[in-house]
Length: 374
Image (cartoon, rainbow, N blue to C red; front, side, top):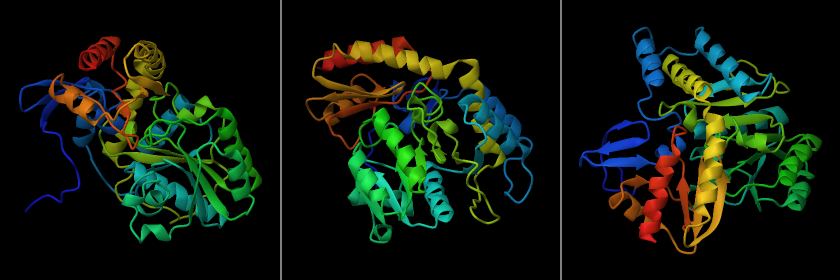
């Protein structure tokens, strides 16, 4: 039976991985500066991660959310401590799309409204409402297009004010660093406007931290660079270092009721241990601070690279925009220099999303390869 052919694939077959390296069946050692779409946060085969998962699976790996699972409370408390997001409530799920889907559904329940405001170049997932709020028409099926989504220019405060003044918007969903869209970032004024206008018009402010959360931006959540307080925070990807984990933080002004949200696999014992491992390593290795420092060093070095027109992002969620499309450059980095990087909907942007354990020497190798190729 053939696989359903929806992914263009590079001719690389990983057979094992360790730290910031992936080893192929061709016996080549690849430097992973993409982390599998920003998923690998504490490095491949991290010993803390492996130990926690092995210990847990020897006891119990899964049961439904119909029973007590103290690991969920332990995880909620640890995220609260490390993020500084006090008094939120945690609902767990299994992916970023599911996190955003639940965030949007919850906003509609809470406000009694149905329209969504999203922004140009946004990417929020591939499920029903999440994909409708994604600015990629090609992946929105007619079924998804029935959702009422208003796309505004990223940063247009006047349009946002005019739209919310109609009092029919349940949620404004925004990435503090756009991921797939090309690493554009809002101004502080714009983020403050989202917060203020959502409060004024009784809409929910949803921060999509699926890619930028868990330390990647140099703060625990990227919205924390803007001194704002979202009603709902969506997270996934680096939350589990490769294990399927997602969740939303829900502000205490939103009250739950039984059956409001639900999930089969979300918050299972292994998922909780995977995320607790990530948090343990983030804290012990000071990886959030490391991401901030290394991101600044990356930016300084990138200024000397030929053809770079913009350096985008922050922390270890980075991008180099060139004056040409980078598809061939990415192929040469993989096949000639054994370095994984990422692309985006901006065809001129090279995305860098390494494990947060990456070191300066790894970036030196990347920049040396770039200079040779350019």
